[in-house]
Length: 213
Image (cartoon, rainbow, N blue to C red):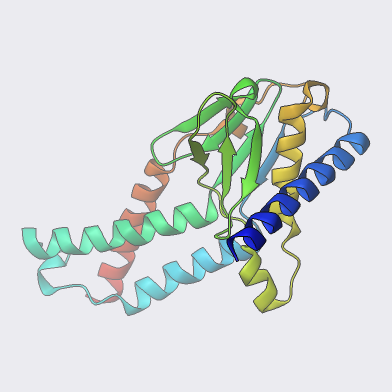
């Protein structure tokens, strides 16, 4: 059984290499940075999640805006922060590839990986991408979240977007002439998710407090 699994993995890796090389043969270097981010489905899900939290949130009496008490207030703010972070992670993730490398929006800041540190990019079963480097055995999971293969099968929709992103990044990492020719502007690189999560958490708390006062 182990031999069969190993053989399937080798076959999958071989097919992946061939697929990436076929893609590389048809690619041309983009004149602008390539950007991947959350789609409308993820953003709509995050928005619905926020509305559900505001409507159903059961804030403790001591968490009211008029007469706040430390314990209940901290509990209410903490739950708002968790929801705010999850919604920000779901709706605001972004990958930007330019001539120098790949920018990955993380919690506190944007992580930069130069092309020389990337050997290949793989899509995981949970929809995230992992960046493998030639000089390190470890891997760098990204913050982004594509539609995972199992979800695509359930809803009977194509999950090619994440695989296409992984193949494109791998091809650009292996072939320098396929990388974007422009450098990303600050607006595309952006900052970390923390400030967006905090701002959203504050808005959720205030909205829930006013709705349930």
